[in-house]
Image (cartoon, rainbow, N blue to C red):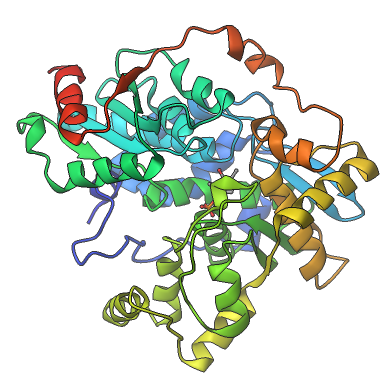
Length: 454
Ligand SMILES: *Cc1c(COP(=O)(O)O)cnc(C)c1O
């Protein structure tokens, strides 16, 4: 399976997730030679081996330049120091103020490029509870060959969240507010993927969810970038990563396998702590979903974790398939030596809402620096799990605090997180969305009638 096909299809034919057959490996000397490169140049060096012949070098460079020029900081992913050897890597300077822009801004361009070449069109359909829809929409705004329809529950997302989606105006951008809840939206998406006949065979649905391999690939880059900025690869680094679907931290694990000296990777979860429970007790077990102050990490199962299980099982797809089938029925464990190996690769911690708020307050009092609740979980886990104070500890800052004002208020601070200047007029911008009944046939007809060449 080539890069193009992996890009266009989410799941492998056996129902599993794609992983590359082999990873490129970079020597210390080669990594060292990348010091001083711009973010986009570095991104080229790291991703080109995966993309290889699918896109000519010049076109790929241009795509990366455009992608990362859209970030509101020249360094793209700046580092902020919290304490001696303690840092936050700000991954929220993109158009929607969260780290998902790193991947989705690129994914939109990659998709469009491949579709242009193949003279094809796709309809991206997705549901959002508020936080992640905007990154997908922003990623598609310049696409010629992609229409995107994002369903959100009408009047159940915050005004900032709604406006981040509905003020992106374009002929190929379609926001649908469904008179129902998030589950209703998700059900409609699932049903539509299951039977696409409503599109009349003229186009096809595509998903850009967190299991898309290209998203993980794009996230490997900033581990290298942060390390190079702090003296890597001649020093090793520790990273703490606020985790939901295990995508972002899996990228860190790959960076390490590709040759970047990383001595510690911390999985930081909220109360939805299936990963932390597995890491501490070798029991992988679904619990009820908990709604927390860090909603982008509210998950029951962690979809990319399957990719790690594949490695832990010596890349035996059949063994992982069986394990996951059992995991859908009840708690599972893996062989002790495999689990011990996982514990060598990762540390973990789970942080509840109260401690999240305490951390936001503490860091603000110590540094006059506001953390969003997801990043606060990363910082807290980093402080709890840190092994070697001489190794720089870098927490991935996954969202801008202005996206989650409720958590800041709940932490007892009176300071209000301000939207950055390029977003300051969000509340004055024109909005465009359509309210539809909670009825899948109506939603499907709307899509069939409104995509570009319908
Ligand atoms: C998506 C998201 C996460 C979790 O990322 P995963 O790749 O799913 O682990 C963390 N923080 C924020 C702000 C997010 O949007």
